[in-house]
Image 1 (cartoon, one colour):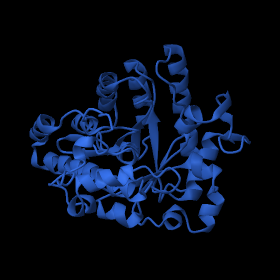
Image 2: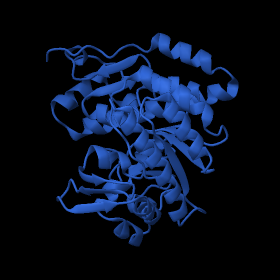
Image 3: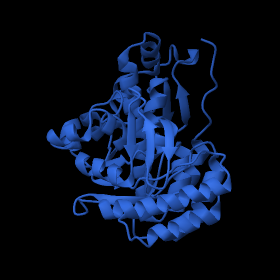
Image 4: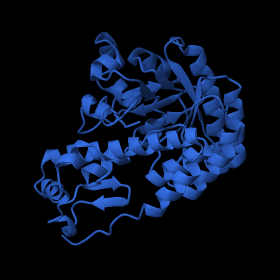
Length: 344
């Protein structure tokens, strides 16, 4: 899922996202609650109509943003109180409030309010946050006013402690929610610890329900995690890296600002059918970045989103054909490390 935190994916229109193969977008209830407010969005027909997106939307409850962006003042079993990063106003957010905000926004999938801890984190703090996240998930389930048209997902927490992850997964599974997410990863713990967390957690989540890994990741991460049984991902990498001139290809990351691309007539990826690859050379794209043209961010963002969608689509077909291991091996054989940064 491309990330449209504020109700828009940076540099891309809904029609471009559809053309790239995007099936679902992610929005963020925390940011939309602060601006423009869920009441405004609801009056204007809900988030789909507001942002002009006809396909499914998932909204994050804001738990991660509260603990990473906001000036946090107080957290208790009841909820959190913090200062808005926009104007400093005091905001209170509880599981019931987070659910009501998402009910008003009208996303297809909504997330339970959870407490996300940083890495590294002491075990005692991780355990408190895990148990609080389970209790909050139950409160979100009871407060959920639109179970008929909005699927509420629980979020597994527990930092890097396998037993906490297992306990959280099993307790959330008992709630019989429509889907489950693994949160609190990609916060500095590194790939190997993240994979260990998944290996401990995924066997204890219902096999017949979607598993969503939040905030991940690189193309390598996606293939590794799909092989482990993850179904849904969101990440800012495709669009954030595009805005800095980094394009994902089957042979690794291309740094378009590098001097080596000044006279390069090749497309970013000859196997890609996106507008950037069909119509423009690496040399031209490099020129756009150095000229600080907005088109640079548009074209490379479009390419990166298309690359990610093609990668996941290929994995999905490989699973159906029973050849995911072959696809993974072939991909990793050709996918190289990013180009080294050059002096301009």
